[in-house]
Amino acid sequence: MIPRYSRPEMVAIWSPETRFRIWFEIEAHACDAMADLGVIPKSAAKTIWEKGGAAHFDVEKIDAIEREVKHDVIAFLTHLGEFIGPDARFVHQGMTSSDVLDTTLAIQMSRAADLLLADIDALLAAIKRRAFEHKMTPTIGRSHGIHAEPVTFGLKLATAYAEFTRNRERLVAARKDIATCAISGAVGTFANIDPRVEEHVAKALGLTVEPVSTQVIPRDRHAMFFATLGVIASSIERLAIEIRHLQRSEVLEAEEYFSPGQKGSSAMPHKRNPVLTENLTGLARIVRAAVTPALENVALWHERDISHSSVERMFAPDATVTLDFALARLTNVIDKLVIYPENMQKNLDRLGGLVHSQRVMLALTQKGVSREDSYRLVQRNAMPVWRGQGEFKALLNADTEVMAKLTSPEIDELFDLGYHFKHVDTIFRRVFGEA
Image (cartoon, rainbow, N blue to C red; front, side, top):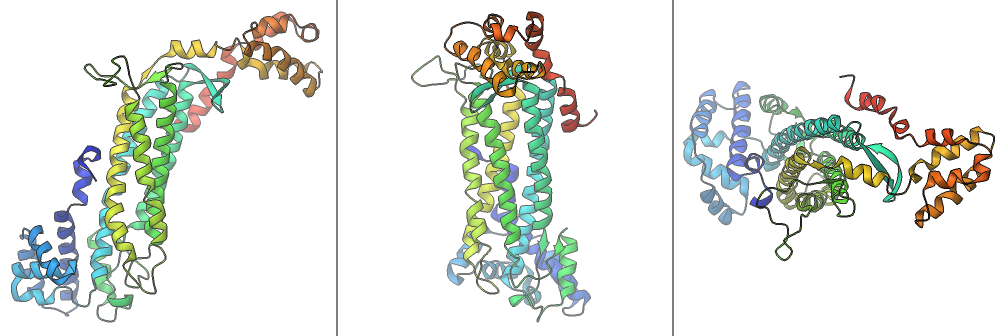
C-alpha cells in the first residue's frame, strides 16, 4: 500500500490500531461467554471490558515486546495485561493464536468487502446514467479491432453494467463465505474451550461459526475471496482498455476528462493521454497478483502451518486497498467521460457502407441465391472499398448479378442504420429492468 493509490477508509481497516482493537473484542467476547459458562468469574469479564475497552494500545510498545518474545499475539496479550491487571490471567483461556488471527482476518475482509460493494454500487450508478444518456448513440462495433456492424454506445456501457452486476453478486457470495469465526483452540478440537464460546463470539461480531477449523479457518474460503477480487480487477481493466482504444487519436470517440491546467506530457504540450485508464490497467495487475498465492495458501500442512501468514499480511491489505482505489477511479472516469457522437458517426461512415454487408448477403439469400454465391457477390464488391476504389452501395448498384436480384430501393433500405438498433430496448430491459 502506498498513499498514491490508497483511500483512508479502506486503509484504516488494515491499520495496527484497528487490528489490535478487533483482537481485544474477540478476547473480551470470549471472556463474556466463559463467564456465563462459569469458567471464569463474571467480575473478571466485566473488568476486562472496562479496562481493556478504555485502553489505548501502544503499537510501538507492542512491537517492542514482539521483538523480544517473537510472537505477535503474546506481545499483545502482555500489553493488554498492563491495563487489566490480575484478571488478565483469564484472557485467552483455552484459545490459540489462530483463533484470534483468523477471526480478525475474517472481520477485516468482511469490512473491506462492504466498502468494495459500496464502490461497485457507485460505479454501477455512473455506468447506468451514461448508458441511458447514449442509449441510441450510433457507433461502430469492432471484432478483432476491425469494423464489424453498428452498435450504440449505450450498449457498450450496458455490457459493462451487466458485468459489474455479476461481479457484485460474486462479491456478496465471497463475503458471506469469508465471514466465519474460529474459536476452537489447538488443532481445532475444543479440548480446552467450549464450542458455545465460539458461537457467542461469532454472533457478537456478526460472523458465522466455522464448522471445522483444524486450528485455522480453511483457506479455500480466502482463495475464493481473492479470486473474486481478481475477476473484478479484470472487469475494470476490460472497461479501461475500451476507453483507451476509443481515445486513440485516429479514433477519438471518447476520452478521459482533461481538466483545466492539466498537462499531458513534459515534452509535448499538445498531448492528452489516457493516463487514468492506463493506471487502472496497472492496478488490475496488482490485484490479480494476489490470486495465485491465495490459491497456493489452500494447501497447508496437516492441521496448520503459517506459510499462508506472510502472504495474507501483505496481499489482504494490498489487494483490497488497490481495488477500492481502482473502483473509485473508474467511477470518476465514467462519470466525466467525454463522448464524441460526431466522431462515432464519422468512423461508422469511414468504410463506405461496408458495415451493412451482412444485410446485403442475407437479402440475396432471401431472393433465392445460395449462401455461398451471396457471400461471393458481396465480398467482390466489398474488397475494392477497402482499397479506396469506390462506395459499397454504388458498386452493388453497378453489379449486374446483384441487380438481377435486388432493386436500388431495396439496396437503399439495406443501408438503414436504424435497422441495427431495433432491439436496443429489449437489451436494456434485460440489463436494467423495466424501469
